[in-house]
Image (cartoon, rainbow, N blue to C red; front, side):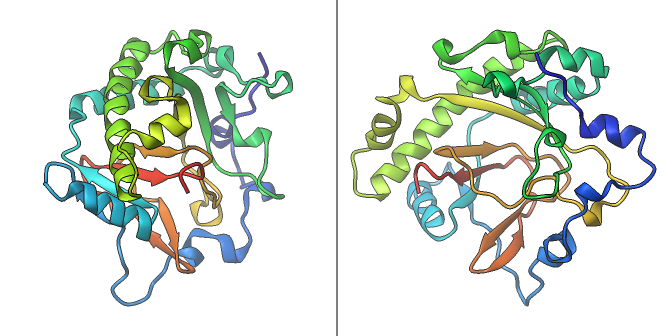
Length: 263
């Protein structure tokens, strides 16, 4: 495995913010938030309502991103996933290093950090743990940490709900394009059983000057769909029509982003 230089380790011994993390003035969080009158919010879709499918399609067409509530993923399943994620990053650095990414070998799964790469000439303030969770043929449990207790069980339980939820979203979007409901799943992977699900746990250590950094640089997602579990700390922003909008924290919601493959 490789060796990870982590933002978390850097933050624990930091006296001043290293210049390679400082964003140009126009990219700083305070500068990118749209502060016009009555700022818009990304749509929130109640999946228990009869018009949920049409609202997903409208939101995907207009925004490319939406939040879902009453989505059927149990709150305790999400809470357990968050617990094991937090506890992994609380482990000693040498324990996390057991799962270090090794980009030189072409392996992108495992424990990694933005310190190892940069966007342009600036680094982003985050570490992560990344691995496949489905289908079984795509999973390498060597990248799944032994600690904390219950990590594997939490990910497998959550994955089962994600397969159902993403399958339903793909069906709704297919229908919205005038296709058969299984068209997207079939086009991407030969059907639901072939869809590859990847899990990424992002960790943003406390920063001494958060107004100068970004936890993630502006980007689009390479995948078909991203389903994001947010925590209670707002920070995600979405670009629309040349403005950046804060994503409102909706307790219990999941954020669904349409990725490059669907677009």
